[in-house]
Length: 483
Ligand code: NDP
Image (cartoon, rainbow, N blue to C red; front, side):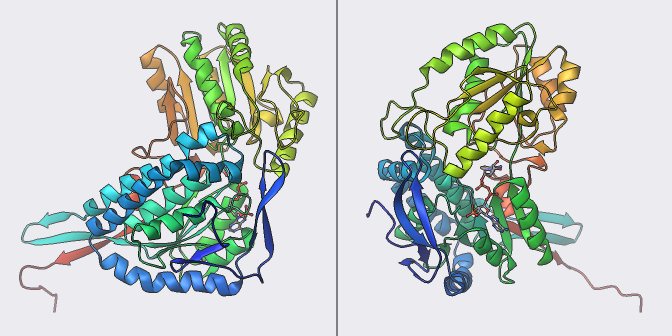
């Protein structure tokens, strides 16, 4: 296997290039160096990507689920065997430390392929008895699904969308973020090596306009987007025009509530995982950390101590646990929020500036005494910036935690189990945590409510979003008519 993809697109079972497309430079975020030059999909490539899926899907949907699943599970095995090479590529694509990519990217993608591969043969309908007559239902694939990815977890997103789509008998055209174009091509290559018939999983490159062209095509039946709320609004509206199915995995500004009785060490660990993993570029991050007044000083002092263990540096050094932001543009967005935090009166506890080194590094940053009206408490930052807010009572904190348009995730740390469940019941969020944070196993549904999204990824739930029900009424007796 070549370590790097050999062309810009993977269509109909092979790498293809069309130099006429605008150039996309893939930049290694730890140095700013260009590591690959690709081309955007031209209309000819888009046409090839869509038309090849249509023919392939007819055969694919006619196979048994077990046959389809066997190919997905084989692809999972190949991904695991090549985890090291795939992790190296993911680190180049995103700048995330190898320490992270070795355990969180291709491995998570392989989990999705294995899980949905196992489930493929169990996608069935039901039998509804009606006396003599009966109805049976059939779960049918939707047809052609378009996947559009964000740049923070390129391998994982390509698999979280591709695996359930293929398990249900669909075809997929996947467009990665222009910022991280490489890893999804490897996913396509591996799926085909595992036996996926040509044309069922095509990857094409491009900026937003290529995504928009895919969604506008009448042959597309479903769109699954991972991205920001503003992009989600546009994509959802474009899909509505053709009455297409959608899954929207969008942004968040999730609350993480720490009560006085919480285990301090676990709460600090949860806040670290929920703010600084992948340099804070995680959609479900708990970036509004509400800390009850009795534990606040202990929390801040232990957090500050723990942050001295951050090792920023060369992402390929496996002892490094903190990498750069994905791009210069994203770094500048985050720097803008650091200025806003300071100018609106938040108290800087640690960090607060660009690191003094090459690449797009920002120091892990904690602001305390943040109030609900500050920009850093309202807007998704998507960088290593934690806002600590003070609170006194459960009733007060619940109202404030839910006072946001977002509803992706929410978490609570407390040793009072009754309170933990009461708080979770009150959360207006799709993915909740008690005494832990940010785990996303493939077995559990993942997704948001309110502006954070529509539909769910992972788990058996995802099957409902990549298939539709046909209901068949069977008459067993004479047909009665009024005349
Ligand atoms: P964007 O919303 O900027 O982009 C997402 C994808 O949509 C990219 O591939 C982008 O292409 C594409 N796109 C942009 N405009 C259009 C359009 N008009 N039609 C079709 N496609 C379009 O998000 P980012 O890539 O900046 O990712 C960060 C965001 O993703 C954050 O808000 C984060 O919260 C969210 N996210 C949500 C997750 C979840 O599961 N809920 C998980 C991970 C991230 P291009 O970038 O090439 O322009």
